[in-house]
Each structure stands twice: as structure tokens, then as C-alpha cells.
Length: 452
Image (cartoon, rainbow, N blue to C red; front, side, top):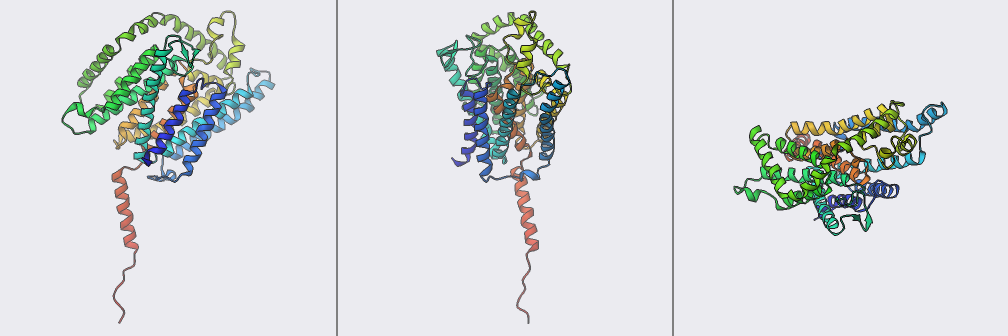
């Protein structure tokens, strides 16, 4: 049981973020950041196995360099914002209190990444953390479905945004859609990878009932969110994941047949909710016009200070400033730009956007290389990248990555994937041990008989 303590603790921390309502607001976000930071500090104090040691991994140095560049960029944003304000430019929009909140939240995200990294410093630890997070996602899907059945118009007895749609404790049904789409990808990926790894003749016995149940629960919760973009993105990622994981077992056309069968099964299982999705599709053009108006208004502002933006946390002040009679209907009620990349560009400029992309590449490139080398953890790395793709694609139209609970979940998954990409396999560890033993044997002095 002891090897499961730390992975279960990490999953429990993220679960607390899902349970607390309004994780995008100041109070809950600060509380979650503090909880993750304390957990991270406690776990890094505990001596754990590292194969190889962290600082001996080549991938860690590009990550530290790019992260340092990002910190440097973020540290000069307040100075530049104040200089712009004094120069009479587009200043006056920098909000120090909101900026401090965003910096603390980013610190919590870094701690979540470091926590996932630390627990996954061996392949076995990474596997346990992945499974613990997957089970946690399945449990939360079940809880959300029960909550939605009991009260489809509220969260914990309070009226919610998107009445009649599953929301969980998140601020929006679309955010819930991002999470349950990601959990669906995790579960299907584990079903496929386990099916391929087992050598049992009976195909039914090769399907893990726990993973199958989690996949169905997550897909059911996803459909109940009636989030058009989340459902569409999830379908794309599920199809892509299936084709990638089965690329060596099936031809392209055989894989395509499998995908079609899976989609058909999904239609049959969730036929009851497709009516609600179809009803929302009727209004797709109008919603796209609203998104376009939001994007246009905030891009025009962002283009006024394209290099360094207006400072972290400045979105609310900017949005309140640019609301006019013609844009009141689109801008007055929003809490985010509904595009995480546009909002990051508006707040940090091109320098912040490039630095953030560099950090992402430093995390993802080692994972891609490990998959191409076909290491033992390659299936899990493919799944984690598929999960991240759900967040990245849905981030084009919604703001799940700006909800603290969901950002912590994804950061921990990426930290785990980064560690697993550079872990030594069991065979490599055995070979290294043999080499060390041989080196020690060569250094031992040879003792002969007594001198005559």
C-alpha cells in the first residue's frame, strides 16, 4: 500500500480543487495554490528513488533555462506597465492586486508541475500517479452526474451558469467539458494500451472493467455538459489517440474501421443527450459571432502594446474600459477572453507568449522523443499529450486553462509526463547496475598468498 500513498495524495489535492466551487476566484485560487505548495514541499523533502538523478537528465536544463526566461519576462512586466502609464500611453490599466493574484496562481501551477515530476521520477511512480489521477477523474465524473440529476439548475444549492447542463463545481459547463473530455482520453488510452500489453486469448478479458467504467462515466458527464466545442475536440483527440496507439497493430483502414465502430457505439450509448447538443448547434452561428466580437475588441487593444502587454491580471480592467454601447451585450458579462492565447498575449505581449511557448516545447519535446524511441512508457506519454491537446484546442474558444483546479490537474500531468520521458527503463537500470558492479570489481585489489 505504501507505494500508492504519494500518488493518492497528489490525486486528492487535485480532487479538492474540483470540489471547491469557483476555483477561478481569488479566495479559492489562493487556497489551492497554498495547498499545492505545501504538498510539493513535503513531497520533495521525502527521499525518493530517482532513475537517473534529476540533475543528470539532459532534458532538465532546457526546461530550467526557458522557465528562467519566462520568470524574467514576467518580472519586468510591472515595471514596463508603470513606465507606459507615466509616458501617457496605454497605461493605467495595470492592476497590482490582480497581478499579485496571477503571480501566486502561477507559483501554484509550477508547484503542481514539480509535484508530478517528483512523484514520477521512476516509471512505476509515474504509472501509479497516472492511474490515481484517472480514478480520481472517474470518481468526480460519477459525483457530478449524481449532483446534476439531483439539481440540474444549481451547484451546491446555488443557481449556476448554464442551467440544465452539467457543471460540477466549475464556473462553466464548458470547463467541466474540458475535464471530462480529458478523462475520457485518459481512460480510452489505458484501455487500448492494456489490451495490447496482455497476452490473454479471450479479448473480453483484456479489457479492464475499471477503465471501461471510468471511460463511460467521463463520456456521460461530457455529454451532459452539452459543450459543443468540448465534445468536438474530444472526438478528434479520441480518434487521433486510437490511431496512434494502434498504428503498429492495424493498418490505417483497419484503424479507421475501429474508430467508426467506436463513434457508432458512442452515438448508441448517448443518443438521449444528442437532442440537447443538436439544439445548441442551431445557435452556433450566433455564438460564433459573439466570440468573434470579443476576440476583435480585445485584439485591437492587445495590438496597442504588442511587445509586453498590459500586465498579468489586467483583463478585467481592460474589458471594463473598452465596453461601449455597441459591444455591451458581448463584453459586459464575460470574465475571460474565451481564448487563453489571446488573453495571454493581451496581458504579457509577444515576449510573454514566446516565452510560454518555449517552456511548453521544453516539456513536450522530450516526451515526443521518448515516444519515437519507443520507450516502455511511450503509451502513457502519448495519452498525456492527447489530454493536453484537449486543453489546448478547447482553449481556443473557452477558458478552462484559466480555472485554477483544471490548470493544476494539467500541470501535474505534464510534470509526470516530463519525468517519465527521461526515466530509465528496467533493462537500462539493470545494465547500469552491471556496469557499476564491473567497475567496482576492477578497482578491488587482488590479494595473493603470503610473501616468502
